[in-house]
Length: 157
Image (cartoon, rainbow, N blue to C red; front, top):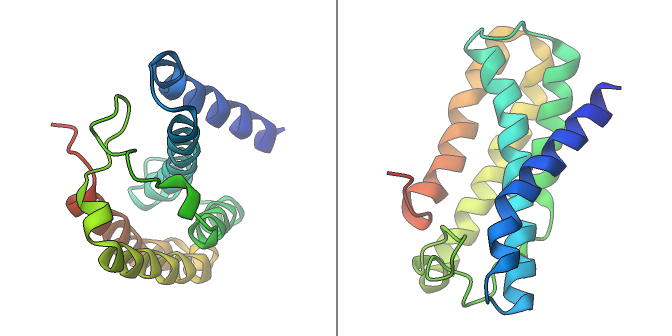
């Protein structure tokens, strides 16, 4: 039942975030790509939230749940996301926080993407090995996510 509840939560969250996008006058291909990448990022956020909650000891450590969340992140990091990022889907479009710098620095973006794959793999190896191992892998995973967000995502401030 827990996986079903998680899936329903993620679907409802992604639906809330994309309603305004669907109602806008954005090219349907761009809107679809943005919805896909936002859903992908929501899945990252959900699973990182599980791991982060355990690392901060806000929720009890559970090796099985930690391993599942880490495996989800690792799988997500390996998916081909190339169709999520069409030119014209930057923050000039309502609902997007992607900075135009993404398209100007694709080599750097790809390098950061590979860093995320590596950090996600390290987390996958560590997550089920105890709270200390999970905590030890959080910095690398958070750093890999943050590296892209710092340079290529509009700040929430």
